Image (cartoon, rainbow, N blue to C red):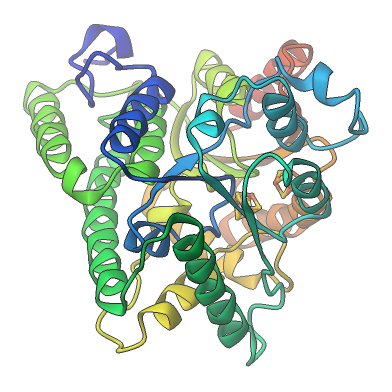
Length: 388
Ligand code: SF4
Ligand code: SF4
């Protein structure tokens, strides 16, 4: 029996079900009210374990809505990635509640647009820009990134008047690994044919897990597993056994760009894997424990994130192979945000790889946060799913 998301007991069953942003806001507000400083961030390279080890709370800043983009375009070029325009628009219109709660911001040198946008917002909050090595396989990349992480730690300690220890970072590493293993256990139910959870549920869980501590999440995980197992016992699953399974890869997808997930679903497909920073990427591997050099271990882990800002980004193909093997998709959809040159160019490699190695149909969707291209995307997704 298939289910509608609205008809079954939600995976995360609280007053914020279906509203992950409000849940995260409540969580962060509570932490801040207890005296903890808040660190705003935009990117998967921000080392959460170090932020937590200095006693701060990470907050993902708003970047996924179309609404603030017209205000941003008064300053930024229109032909810029919507994620960057949205981030900036939220700040200059003072409408990102997470930024409102943030005492400092962590930035990274990933793509040019983001780097320059950070300069424009640097006067709004204390900001630390991390110089990200972009040739991850070079011998000095790890030590350079570890130096940057140490400098970030010093910046946070000075800004907040706190201090983080190596033992504290090691404890955070171990906590992250516990959480990541639990999330991967949840993913096992998305691997099933048909899956036992929806893309909305996967998305909500990823969002919460990036801000909440493992300690906070443990009782939530307990309930999640009970709910999924209950579904399994009752034979309730998502989609139908014949629904095409779709793996979505590429740029981060959230807020208004989740229109792509929605369209795939309306066209009869089911999104079984989200291969992006907004989805599964942060949780797919562990950080090495008990190395005696926890900052080095954190540096190694984050340097292995297969973002298109890295060159060569060969790890993206090997990681994608693993995700394909696990989730057994029938098609790959790549989401590229307008003017994101690195993901757009890398898309050629991804297309060639999935077609030649996995013999899977592939569709690249270049889009922004507006609703203007919904029907055009729908036509292309329908054609893709019909071709399976
Ligand atoms: S895709 Fe790259 S730049 Fe964007 S959030 Fe992920 S790691 Fe950061
Ligand atoms: S989607 Fe691309 S252009 Fe936009 S912020 Fe991320 S890496 Fe930069």
